Amino acid sequence: MVAQGPSRGVIRWSLDPPGRWGPVIHRGVDSNPQPEEEEEGDAPGGRSNMALVPYTENALPALAKLHNSTATFHLAGREVLLNQDWRRSGVAAVVWDAAVVLALYLELAPVELRGRPVIELGAGTGLVGIVAALLGARVTITDREPALELLSANVRANVPADLRPGSAEVSELSWGSGLERYPAGGFDLVLGADIVYLEDTFPALLATLDHLCSDATAVLLACKLRYERDSRFLALLRARFSVEEVHFDRQRDIHVYRAVKRAPRAEL
Image 1 (tube, helix red, strand yellow):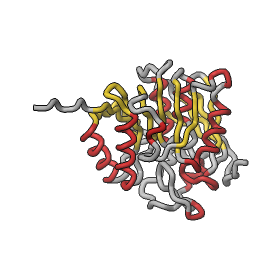
Image 2 (cartoon, helix red, strand yellow; image 1 turned 180 degrees about the vertical axis):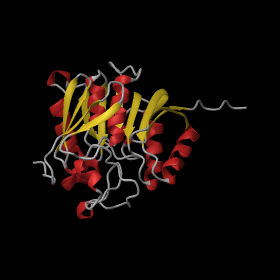
Image 3 (cartoon, helix red, strand yellow; image 1 turned 60 degrees about the vertical axis):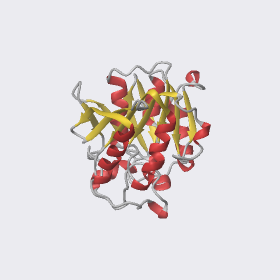
């Protein structure tokens, strides 16, 4: 059962006007929910943050939509209805702007997904992986174990049964741990939305990317550069990958980066 937040309004996102990625928020909820300078570790009940951005219960009114029990999106030619459950699972169980921007990028940018093996890291509610599956990819949608119940329910509700199994598989993945369960270099595309958030996870995240990527794998990361540590992660990533910014959503201050492994240097 999904815990109820203070509002039962539904969040709807659409292209408004055409060509501009913008939300249509019902019940007067602010369209810019991202916290700017919240401190870490404030998930309810003392639980540690699993993904995304630290967020506090008494946050700004602009964050009210994160307490809604559902969020509805029109993507990949379908209505995608996601359950959210902030009170139970914290920041991993709500939809953040970076996921919306990356999902729209997959749909609107020249990214060929049909039949390609794709993996999403830190999927949270599953929006990005669900959209990738609806666009024809064979997606492994991953997060830590506490997030899997809600994630699995959202995938079952939004990926038609005739596309499963094979198009969308939910799997537990804690970065840097149990990587042998995933094929080394076995994915054409690795996706991550707002997964750069705690500096002590950077080594494990980089090790995970290194394992999952071949020289031909592309990584798409959507993030908001809130703190210096976010830029430090990009610097660490550039030491191993060629990184370019392929999209910037100015309204939400969300960057989308594409990264590809650097070719190993030839021995002298």
